[in-house]
Amino acid sequence: MPHAKNRFNLSELAGAFGDLGTLIPFVVAYVSILKMDPVSLLLGFGAALVAAGWYYRTPFPVQPMKAIGAAAVTQTVGAVALTPAMVVGAGLATGVIWLFLGATGLAKRLSLSVPRPALLGVVMGLGFSFMLEGIRMMSERWALAAGLLTLTLVLIARSRIPAMVVLLLAGAVYAVVEQPALASELARVSVAFRLPAFAWPSLGWQDIWMGALVLALPQLPLTFGNALVAISDENNRLFPDRPVTERKVALSTGILNLWSSALGGIPMCHGAGGMAGHVKFGARTGGASIMLGALLLLIALFLGDSAGTIFRLFPPPLLGVILFLSGAELAMGSRDPGPEKVDRFVVLGTAAFAVLNVGIAVIFGIVAYYASRRGWLRA
Image (cartoon, rainbow, N blue to C red):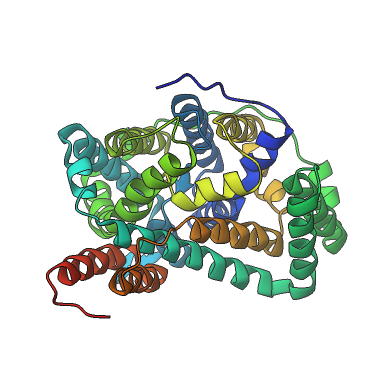
């Protein structure tokens, strides 16, 4: 593999913030609803991003796991009431599972079972789901969202100024104007160094078992489709000089989850939408991931207890614009698999299911593809 240096410039810094649309809402939910320690969460993310940028040398993302995060927002899975210890236990179980899949080669073998049209459908569907979620977030303040989206598109198309820099500044100014008390709260933010406690000794077997059963296992199909197969394909399409393998991605997923759970943090993965967001706003090397990680580390270690106040500088319409454009970038990355109409049906059908559930989409795509090859499916 040729050596590619990470860059640390304004373009990479702007691209570093291209995944805030998923990071901030989930972190805020974990902290405000489940009452998890913001220092543990941000320290886990920061170190993982620095490691990913240094190792992969592409804008490799680190994101909250979506299915587990959605459960955290509601605080329940079925009849089970979630606790912070169960989330930490889910991270520990997730780390063990993905280390096993990577070390044994199962991750690679399973990924080979996903045909190209099914993979393209997963990528397209993920892009659509990001766009729809972005629209939902923008709908909270349509006028602001329309202005920010228009400004961002103009800057991306015609300006040498990184669009993300202007977008973040505009969103922060609006947040302070709309919430006059926010300025005084920010002025009262104090610097205080704090490290999280080692979390594993406080876990009980029930925390690990329930975390694995109700959180980690249901997340597996989504992680497999989005954070293993799709991210590997997306990285290798965009950066063929810095390819990744499914085995490496599975192992790094396992390692970062063990690290996060040891701190008392949340389950994490390498989502393909995150890379699309970083790239959309200018990132081309691992420098973007390293700079974002370093910033999160600083916030965690010195401003962790004020993270909720700092994140209020990014209103939902701003995050919605970022998420919408990230989804569009991801969806546009899918390619026509060929001239056959049935292949296009597999892509579009898989995309439709991926908006609802990536795990179901992967299964549908595989079944539909092989059914078409046997002549059982006509379109």
